[in-house]
Length: 335
Image 1 (cartoon, one colour):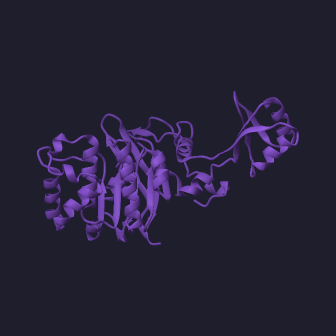
Image 2 (cartoon, helix red, strand yellow):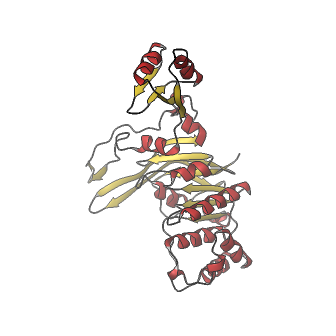
Image 3 (cartoon, one colour):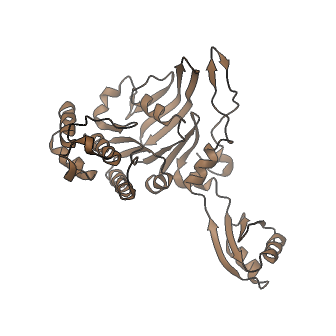
């Protein structure tokens, strides 16, 4: 597959009279290939939106190389701008305009046939509300309108920053179905979101950023596999005896209030056979697999990586140490 987005060594520093200098993005790398539904994840303040704004030429990067659809960004971004749809941060619209009028103005400015307006309103579930004034829209409806504006050009690349913001569960599901449909039609989607369960359902690849640096990247299943400790939840009527038997069989067991967790189990029948042969019958045997939320929290938790420092007049206010991409290779995953 060909690369649609390439970012290498992106660095962006912001300056504030009150707080001095802050490194928002620090040597960040991102690769999105054609046809991917790519999740871009990170806590608030991690550098996600700054990265997207730099990629789209909305802020000037201090260092790094960026390419969009094969063109250097931001220098040659106008060459491919007609093939890119994007929403970054909270959408802003004229409250007295209707959704239809808003999109009509955008279509005329972009040389897009106005026939696309009803098509994109249908795609985002706003066709029946398209002639209402935007000031009467809920946050979720405004978010749908923003996505509609990004789809107006029929883009090859769609960049969405928190597209599910303000949506109810039904709207989130509709947005999920829309992104899947777009990916099936050949559109490459880069989406950032705090709804990690949705990202796991939608995306085939993921990049996680924390404190301005990439901490994980790759196929979702491979990233999750790197954190799989092959644990099994076990419930039995004789937990103390089960712990003894499993320990004697060389298995690591952790005892909890109402269950046991056995670690390092490649085949769950090992547990059931070890206990069953000694007359300890298993009531529950459930493999525990990491999900994207647990991996995200492990990689971005406050204790995992030192904070990126603020500096005032060249003096470091808070200290920092090495902060490198998680070594997934040692876990058997090629990131």
